[in-house]
Length: 483
Ligand code: GLN
Image 1 (cartoon, rainbow, N blue to C red):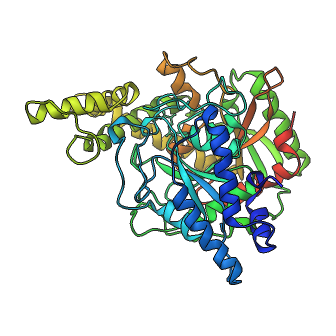
Image 2 (cartoon, rainbow, N blue to C red; image 1 turned 180 degrees about the horizontal axis):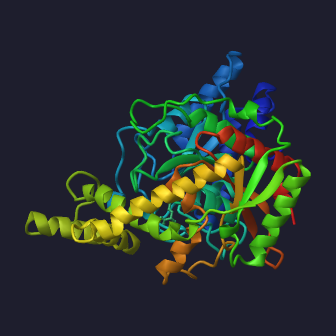
Image 3 (tube, protein in one colour; image 1 turned 90 degrees about the horizontal axis):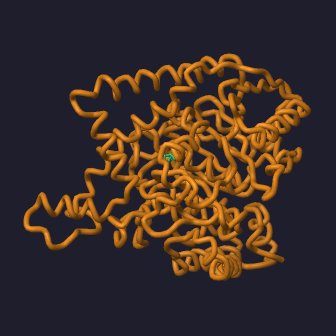
């Protein structure tokens, strides 16, 4: 039996039946990482001692016939923007290359309390800024489906780890698409809950009003299991919502017949048939499952990219002011005075994309341009949110492509930041509105190499259960292999 390909439920059953131990499972996964990570480069740091200590504790519970927690023995990977106590947390930035946090992020703490083994920290775009994981300050990650291509980003390391069975599940962060887009490009499931659903405590801030923590898994049910563990109010994050968390896993089985599926025209204008054909087949399948598919308009969609890149850079420029060589991590030596120390530290510590965003963000917030850019973007954000609220008066869920293109070649978009920004054209709208979204596999491209295509499903605020239910019905009906 290949332990590294098991679902969370199969892990649970296997442990209870004593077919294997949690220690064997973690060791099998670490061995696979040892063999395969050299080519994929999904991980930045491994934490085998921490993973094994947890596994031994689970094995003790099994022997003592104590009840097993929901993620008992599950080997998970964590994006390197989430704090891990005693384990290096770099945000894939040189400026935090040697930073060791004194505390765990709430999501990490909850995973471990639920029995999961933290295998290590995964590569990403520096401070989660990017769509390909090529902006990592260390090295790019390769897409396990085709090593010459990007895994998407910014949570590309987490997506690649799950796609290549180097972890059973993973955590990522999504600010404008960074879980959903890499899930689509690597052929796994990735989900962003409603803004506030999962605590951001211990998530290194990029754009605080847009940042989310969320799960990757190989199946919808695995994602439901992980979300159920990490979701819910946390007193240490004042934006975390005090809204009851349903049992997502139980909700998977409810009926989908009669649900209304809205398909926004704006997301299909000029879409390449390579992606569009698969999404159409996915929609046909949903209709066969008894859902009612209908077109819908979302009139402010065209403004989303501009709006997102004004707001996220503004917030980033403020959040990243803390890396000054005094408080965290790296400090450049050889400066004569304080100002020069700041300058040299930030110049050497940050990569090109991070600097570009700090400059852009500082500009849109500057007194002369605040009204023209930042304030206007906030107004547009309100209009985009209204598009969603109005849409959800008419339909239960929305379906769109996750990404306009399949995985592109490493290096292909690096010289053109605008092209890179357009990778998020279908994901940033939900981020701006704060509604939950999931990307599920929806077949592969017809032309060779056959690359994964992702379908994005969106629901209204705090309606994750319905979203997971539709995704699960789609998966069970063969939607992942559609086309
Ligand atoms: N690719 C988008 C960006 O570069 C989204 C990033 C994210 O969601 N963290 O901002």
